[in-house]
Amino acid sequence: MNVRPVRAFIGLGSNLGDPHAQLERALAALAGLPGTVLREVSSTYRTAPWGDTDQPDFFNAVAAIDTMLSPEDLLGALRGIEATAGRRRDRRWGPRTLDLDLLLYGEVMRDTPDLQLPHPRMHQRAFVLVPLAELAPALVLGEHGSVTEALARIGSAGVHRLDSE
Image (cartoon, rainbow, N blue to C red; front, side, top):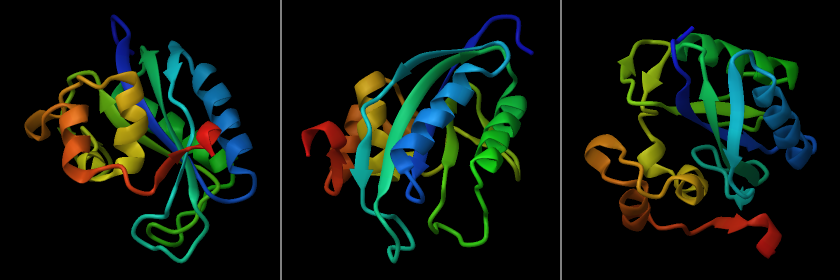
């Protein structure tokens, strides 16, 4: 555990079962992690699938937490929440009951087989940047500039806020 809480951002996604309920349960599980406080949650967005496009649309959101857990312990906890939701990893970019991505963990940088921080592809994904921009538009993503600048480069096509449909 850390000495002081670290602000981390978690990407949430689901497109199987009841995606909205999956995200709500995941948020409750995040709030229940030891040494962790759920600080903010973006709106929920309906997004077209990315990578493998032969599947239902996703529901996506981003949560900001303050946590005393190490990045590795937090990642393990996220995988545990996914497993509880019935997540199976049998198809890359395939449909899933729940997907939790550790996007950022304070200023920490990691590049290991199990953990890459910041998330290496978030600057290419509108389904991450649009909800992240709600919470931290000026947050700098390394050489990719701020969240707002990265989003301006790729656009937000195919990302629709649910309460606006």
